[in-house]
Length: 74
Image (spheres, rainbow, N blue to C red):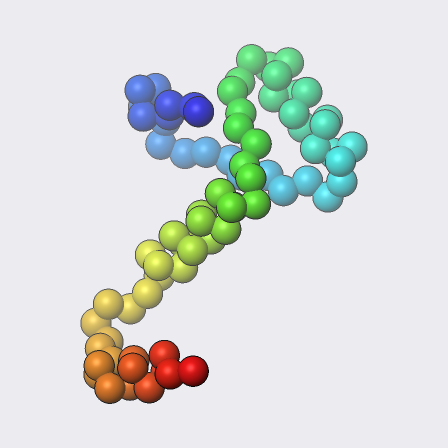
């Protein structure tokens, strides 16, 4: 696990290669220039997407309990 907090890094780059060849090229370039990287699992990518969506939610709007319960009914 990379520990970015200790290095005072404020930004990161996320790259989604189009092919396995591009993936390998990018990974070898990162290694060659001496930077650290982490390959994310599908679950980690999904968690980042959900986190990003949660950050964009409008917290000023409310929904009644009845409406929530109705939507949860099977």
